[in-house]
Figure (cartoon, rainbow, N blue to C red):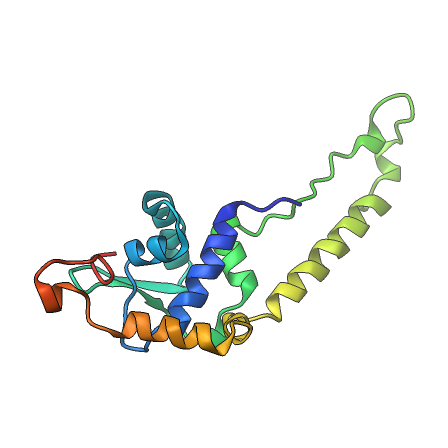
Length: 172
């Protein structure tokens, strides 16, 4: 199974937002700069996370993204489903009913063994992702990096100090 890079981006950005001070919204620009990602493409994934109810977006000069619920209540599976959807990666084409070895339809009333094992594997994978939260991921970030991230996003934007915006907390 191959996932889009949007899943990685969504997980990293959600975990970074979880590390920011509670009253801080992170702009898409600051998220893109922090991870070295193209802002326009990242916006698509942040919007998907917002539509899924994982993030909230606030417009305006101090706007940006915040978690819509506590990090302990957002799972890796939530992020995956928001970005990729929840469709199973294996789709049985019922080839057992085609070709010279075709079985009659009455012999194919349930899923074949291959479809069954693939469905079981998919559900086991989803269960594993369902048990891992964004808080769990943040807990794996070294303490000094969490502190650095928190400090970086707790200081006022440069526009508050010099009159020129850095984009760190601008409109999402």
